[in-house]
Length: 312
Image (tube, rainbow, N blue to C red):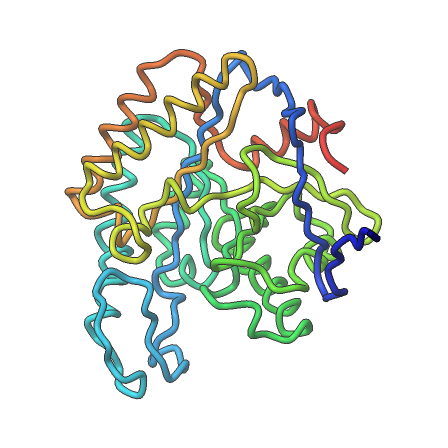
């Protein structure tokens, strides 16, 4: 009997890797012998979402009020939910991370920061990381390669103006196009992207003969599961998910240190009932030793400096 190995057809974009680190998970050395590196991420999208005032002729549905309004009508309720994030939610979150002195990464859309310069000022003053979440909060796979390249450059220019520095990391809305990673490498100023959900640790890929670092993200520890994705029914579910994940990674981290990404949105986590849940988890995690709260750019720089051997 002849064996016929399965082969994927040739398609644009990166090749798929089902193996990764496999059984030989790297024994990472984080700073201060930390067992776990925790990356708290704030997805700041408010003001850059699809809306009629922005000329999109549609409303954005990724907010917690689910209503089937015909897209030809302007949805003022949905707009106001996004406004809550930029008016109130972001500042409730700011007070918490400032109190706890936790450095964070902003997955920020350039236009969102333009529309609320106070948030950009906070990023600058607190030295949080501005990681580009796109020029707008848009589905980049709908763009041509040329349009996407143009929007990447617009985002860089905008961040430089509002935050005083260009972004060195990138994360698309939901997922990249088949061109995104190549465009980031061609641009040359990005140290990493987070457009992958396929590992617990950073890893390198080859993009047109150049090494490029991926710092993976996750939907598991993400407040989008409050109504937007299947998941949390209450803030208690959120705390339980975070604690259980942390505890397992912390145990594994005794021999093989790990990374944990926590994804948040001002219009969701910024509600009082949910920020209380986040406070409970942060108190819990901070009570343990050998925990490194850090920005994604710091993870990327550490990986480049100390673990260049891991990956292709």
